[in-house]
Length: 113
Image (tube, rainbow, N blue to C red):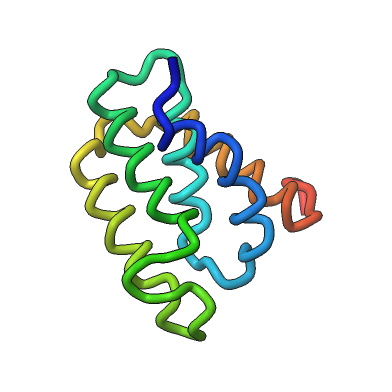
């Protein structure tokens, strides 16, 4: 059974990212973390760490409100980068490749352009 954070991330991640894509300079890292977190081969501890960080990213209330220009996503970045440093070896190139393709799709670009 999925935890409440996992359900929150599953339902809220893509709408939050799509609505803020232009303002999230670390979007590719966030998406790579998402793909790693939901990869069946990812160890449970790694999934838990990434899901907690991703849940923080999509929560409407955090230390620095996301609507503040320039600073809005700095706390989200700090949480995510800390989590990713803890699980660095688990985020594989295939997660990064999927993230790059998804970002291009969300931006309405093809990978060949």
